[in-house]
Length: 313
Image (cartoon, rainbow, N blue to C red):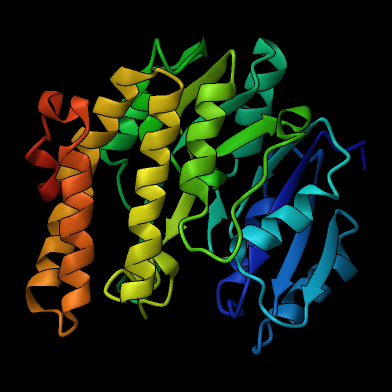
């Protein structure tokens, strides 16, 4: 095998049904110069066996196991400490890369010299007995299309909508003092905004690079927002991302985030709060909305009513 140029950090917990597809999507890459750190975060199913089998058959895989779950942020941080390639990225163990994802992402960075590159992604839902990718959602289109090379958050504030860790490939030295929060959900939102505000230049491409699985059984983190502790982590992540943008003076990006949060995040949460049996849920959401209204940029927010229709698709 040629020397690897990029390391993928692939954490997972209790994903034995989905991990084989994630592993296969790596092995199907048209760019073969990768290595992957598979991190079993305290699984009680056969996830560890799936990871071990991958490493036994393909030397590009390395496996780590946490005896007890430490959470997604901690798992990613452990993986970051092991990266020795010029570039790095993330893939959750229940998602899949598209076949040309690494070729397109790494090729762009090697050409531009930017700090990182962000691509588009789609949601993969269970349809007719199998998971199938959908279309690129409008907020992702706004963040990644058209292609922009060596841009920044002031020139392209809509990029701030692309907050997932696994849609990006970065230069490894960009992560020298950047790590994920631990012991919380939605750990990638604040990190993404730090990436945008720290980078002198980043790239965005409209290519779909990841099929993001929405599990039919509703067990993924993003499907747990009806639980009050998850809601609190979620709202704090949204607050934290806005705070990072505001402190950097990226006012247009703050407005862009408010537009999207008010259109995409708030309405489903309000629907949950309307029938939730814990009054703390509604109180937490009310406090969050009061915080948003206190921002000077709130008056400029113009949430897109078409977002709700896109979410329902």
